[in-house]
Image (tube, rainbow, N blue to C red; front, top):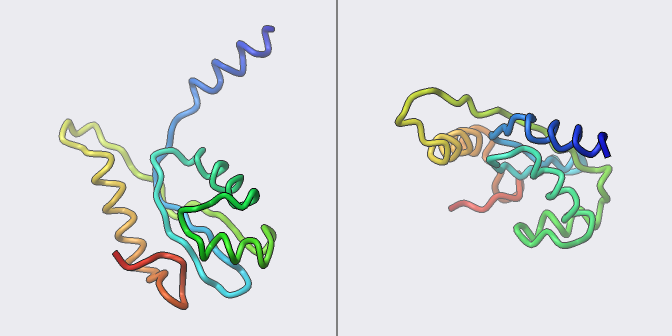
Length: 117
């Protein structure tokens, strides 16, 4: 019972980090760039891909099924630096950070799974 309390406390103390990540197909070098308010959600994305229930990007899911999980890497590209500025807007800052990486890597068409918005 004590262990359960320790784990709960540990979970509460874990800092929530936001930022931009990529899922890379190592076979054809296609990538998906995304952002999240909490990097822990990447485990959920992996689970959805593994169970063929990732409906956010059908092409990525199709190729995950085709090549298998070992053909993909998931990595954090940049963590969002939070500030004490009272006008700091995490959502806007995260979108700007994602835009920067989309502009840099251009993961569209043959190069990736992102759709031009």
